[in-house]
Amino acid sequence: MIVAEDIYKKFNDTVALNRVNITIPTGSIFGLLGPNGAGKTTFIRILTRIYLSDGGTVLINDNPLNELNARKIGYLPEERGLYKKMKVGELILYMARLRGLKTVEAKEQMNYWFGRFDIRDWSDKRIDSLSKGMQQKVQFIIAVLHRPEFLILDEPFSGLDPLNTEAIENEILELHKSGTTIVFSTHNMDSVERFCERVVLIDKGQVVLSGTVDEVKQAHKQSLYEFKCREHVDFLNERIAKSGTVVSSELKSGVYTVLAKLNTESEADGVLIDIAGKVKLTSFCELLPSMNDIFIESVKNKNEEL
Image (cartoon, rainbow, N blue to C red; front, side, top):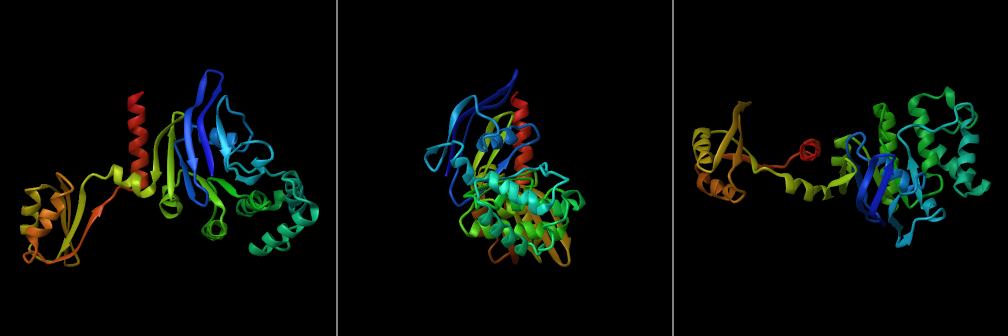
């Protein structure tokens, strides 16, 4: 587990992180969210000891963060930090030695990952001869070669084609299954919806919201419900109007879809009871906001406070 308490970081007159508290549970897939300039990268660089904080503490498995246990963290940066004139094999082995691996172990791990990505003939290729997707695979291998307990991925799918995206996704999920804690720093809310169990949203150097994805969605729901039926839609709309508002009602392929905003959550039960046997429902569900909608709403609200 990574526990960051009261993390404070200032650059000249700019406060990048203002008493931030974040807990990343062991074995989770954790989403670190926020707009550009929110403080996400600063927080990541403190975790990886690229920066030292000006206040607060970071604990890794209950021990203070130091040079030794920082090796438990792997980091895939958004900006590729590859030496372009080096050969792939030379670069990977060099970076592995910096992470404390012996040459024999580093070669074993490199060959293992070459096999996973089916790139066994890449060792003698120069970095500057590789495509963006191929370079991302090399960067990924460097991040995981030392078998970190925690893996931080900063926009891991940025600029990748669907095939390379799928390849990286599959390896991330396999690492998670094997016990690696994954931290996603991303603007892609689709990835958050698909992968993340817990999230924290940072804006202006402060935590705006945090919790499980379901908790966050429940906290931001707006009593929106979708009814689908094949007949008696007028009766349905009239009943909904007594408990709220019919947002939209449309017919498509013989099915009426009615979107309703009810005054309270309990009103949904009343509507269902009253239309039972009178309206033939094909489906009914509560509509929860998407993480993308929550992201936009939360950041707008934070900016309005300032």
